[in-house]
Image 1 (tube, rainbow, N blue to C red):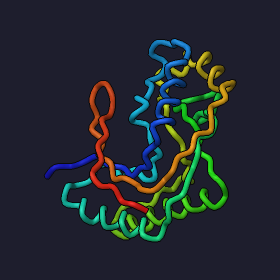
Image 2 (cartoon, rainbow, N blue to C red):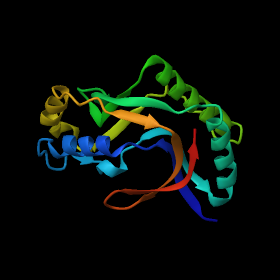
Image 3 (cartoon, one colour):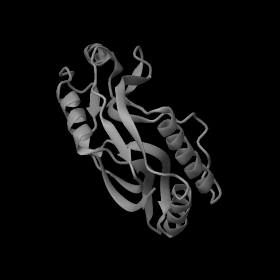
Length: 189
């Protein structure tokens, strides 16, 4: 039986993708320290499902439709750069996501509804608090990131609107170079 590596995401507008590309292109050349994400692959992950069976897709798509049915379109915006776990011990570099109080509440309600709908069909609820972000790079050698950390900590990233009118069930195919993403199902809000 074929399995698919999947997640649910919000896509980004072209203007933000271009700005993220400029940010990544302007990084100090710390060869091999960080694996940078292709700008066109950057997204907001609402839920990582992992490997699913092709036969589970209709149920997942229905759960996603149910979760989206109660949410109206909303708008977020890009925030400032950050790092997980923190700046001293980075393993992921990201750009934050912000929003007005009502839009932020709509996004949290949507993410919670997705969790609840998927939990009802057997997917475990995420234990960690949801922290929306845009992953721009994964650290491969933490001992070589000082210049990158300094660059990102002092960088002011532009606030760019992220209109959210749909969410997407995505397939991720891992290759040696990068992950290749494709849309399996889009659901409008």
